[in-house]
Length: 305
Image (cartoon, rainbow, N blue to C red):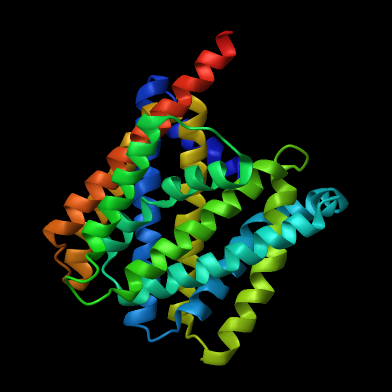
């Protein structure tokens, strides 16, 4: 991971920090979309079950961090919070399986638009589980965000979309996992968190995949490796972007994911997004961006006191 980060820094090192952060965020959105594209292609055109795709995605993800785990050996597994790692891993398994299945049955653009609800669920989870207080403006933003999701799904007006419902459920579970990660980072290293993530994700997704198992061809294995590569680049690029600039400065560019997904979905799968996907996605994104700005402003105010 460090070598990939160094390569990115070497390529963009001459740009001003704020411009570099924007470029890295755009790169992250593109790579996330490409990863989702490959997953959708393998599941639909390659006839591989999404659960098996999830398993191989985790295997190649583990291979990416294995050299670091071996280098640090015992330190990678040292923890006093195994139960919390297990809870987070279990949640992430369900969230991943739902999301991957949704990618096999729902257009890319709709997946991207509905997935913008994750920060809404994270805010809601912080209120319910952490007792965080929010005021009227953020409450209104939350209501508007979930209204945007309803505009995309339109329950009662069109047939209920299984993929969209799975993405919303996945986003809510993932939001809970994020709250657990926030607790873990206080005492655990990023290597330990990543190692235990793979410890739980690989066997659990394998157990789910065995019910639908078909042996992949070498071509499919190559595509699985691509998902690992795109995922690694996306995560590193986003982390670097957040190091160079505040989240509120780069978060608005995450909306480009919907543009990438619309273009790539049209070229590869012949998918044309509905106008309601754009309207609902725009509302969700605007509400999550506003919440992020308000939270950042509140933190700055508290820090200055």
